[in-house]
Picture 1 (cartoon, rainbow, N blue to C red):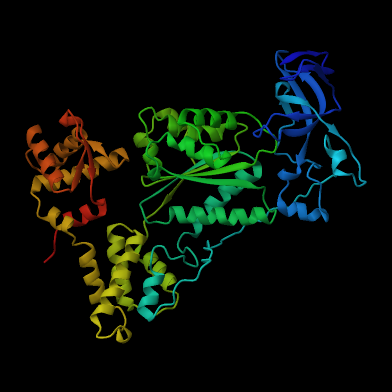
Picture 2 (cartoon, rainbow, N blue to C red; picture 1 turned 30 degrees about the horizontal axis):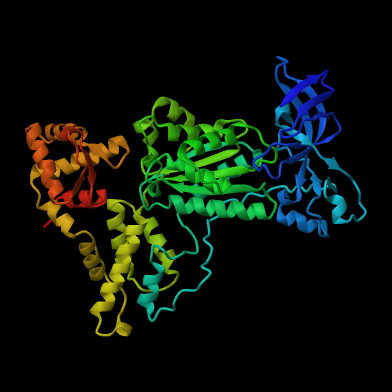
Length: 536
């Protein structure tokens, strides 16, 4: 508790647990409150003054680094083994040298001595050498993002088709990510500039599933971490959360705090601690890069989780860069209220679905000179998937199934030839001829129209669930567009119940049928494929 600030020359303060009053004057070395109570920050007090209102007390300080705060690669440049209690002169611009006087915990004795000192003499003192290294960063230009290789080699394949199947697996680590060079460069430049300037910012990244959004960002972070290790950019911390892995959107606070500080607290307490962390200045605070995948699943009625995630980077001392991923391009306009959308800003990026040429290039780069497919077969599967969704993962799954069909059709696995168009057609029929697709094709006209209404409402909301009332309004609209007589409410409920009994829809029980939640039990791509007219 502070007693007073007199003439801006010295500061009287009392320390908890001590009756004596400590006087702090400019020129002394002080301890300042930080994130770790056991190891507070060390600085030299240069000046004491009051703000314009003369109500708040301020202090001008020169920061020092503890040994534990010095990057490992810089410790090697000392050419000796430093003592654990040494501190190092810090001249970086990332820290604000003006602090609130209330954050001063007390004084510490610091001695400057180049001669060797016994550890027992250093118990209450700190020695320091001058230490400052600056490197001009170099940004990669026109680079194709690469993927690091596995640490454990995979089992050697027995033939060409086995090797192709292993390379085409979605969990296989490719040598590069083709067709996403421009997106990689834009995200790299955005994050690098924020880390270099010590500022915060938001980027909203959208695109249909299977277009390489998460993989591209992971490669950007890997390249930036390599640049940081080489001292080309300041150090930063990367954490990632996924809305799909949370039972409640407010768990985002818990996961972020736990990954930052290893603390596990309740959601409300975590939100308060994060608010304090990103609002208050702290010396030597490194930039945090936060990746939020499946952002649409963090939606709440008040939208406070989304608001905080977008608002924290705008704080002056936050040093927080937020990268958000969602499947809907206009999610901010669809489900976010104005105060949330305004915090997101205008930095957006859309990953377009892959074209058939890009899908063909992805498969070719994965195979990497392994000749397992005929050219026409590759082009067929690429065109089919590109026309439906542009999902690279589905394209890889179909190619893998085609290799299995080709292998089983041969009299002996070793005698199997190249994958032909007939094998690809059979794989496509299997992929898009499940019992669900058969059920959709055999459904009545009103049931098919109701499924179309479900997808239309999901796309309007930007979410993967809606109420029966919302879907029913879409159903009546589509009926008028198709020139059909709109059905009554009771008929609509009966249609919905029949689709739920077939397990095409998942219906959440509710006392009011109008408000029951409706979700698809099959992918939207499968529904759209099943509803396409069948050609003879």
